[in-house]
Length: 125
Image (tube, rainbow, N blue to C red; front, side, top):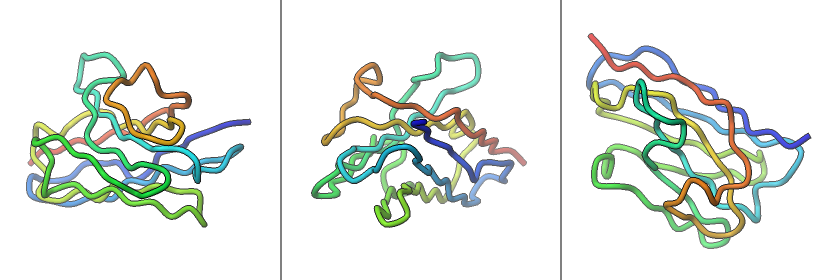
């Protein structure tokens, strides 16, 4: 059974840090780009792409809203992708979903093959 499982969400104060994990089972991540998407409260699941990492060369992508604060990385040996988040802001609040797409990143959520169930992040004092 193909699965992506996110973990690491929670409540954090503004300026704090979190690390999310996206663990794959039922398939190997080696040939997949992995994207993280954020769904703000009341919005559709796909939401805004906040990072992505290509499969082969590990090239990474970030929107301006998170550049310098978020870092995506992958450990193919563990079949896991990570999202390090620092200097978190209240506007980072939302559900965070990882998704898998063959080879290269895309900004189109509808192209992704597999999705996790998401993990919630709340940034609040």
